[in-house]
Length: 277
Ligand code: KIV
Ligand code: NA
Image 1: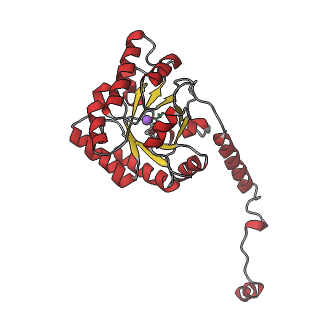
Image 2 (image 1 turned 90 degrees about the vertical axis):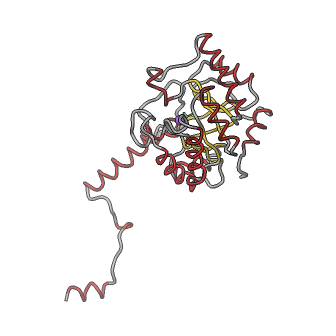
Image 3 (image 1 turned 60 degrees about the vertical axis):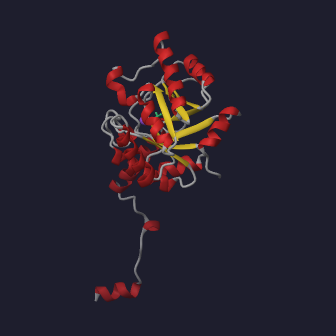
């Protein structure tokens, strides 16, 4: 299958072909994401929560993102790999942002990066785009700012908040973003934003009418993910399957049922005799 480009994504919006994006954080998850046909394999900083066990994405470092992206890139060699810029790696000087973005592109092998925030980060986003790095925006609920929001809550319900999000979407498009994630916003607002900008919108908890959807791997496959927000649909029960497998293994070891004959190596009878002599 041919690798998707940012150009293809613009075309998909124009032709109303939905974009399917999924997170992946290592070799096996990225391999399955690619084989499952995802258009974008996304190394999100949600890895801090679902694979590193932190209770927010704030502790995730640039080195963590690079480490996981390298593994994911080896698993999905033919995919458009997108990597999240983690907490406070694109908020200092524009030079600092460019240096951090360069590391993700050069060391990790990403095809693009994603940044949370609206008009206030547009300058940083634009600098990366001007340097040839495709950047995806992310507005609505931006989890790196969870402590400012006071929790994981729907954003943009008031007219004032909705106007601000619409203005942020326009600012990111102006700055050169190739797409924008809309997270936890009312369907009506996501639809309005989708209609008002030319670049694709990728929704998560943003209703049915965005140009694409994204879900976290561990949520959509129910793989030991601690929470199940309203916007998640479970397409498999990996956690339950893994748990059943492990408890069956433990039970068979304790009951001396594993290993059985089929798993065992044997020696030549003559050698056994020699050893016994
Ligand atoms: O890190 C992540 O998984 C994300 C998606 C929820 C958009 O940013
Ligand atoms: Na993220």
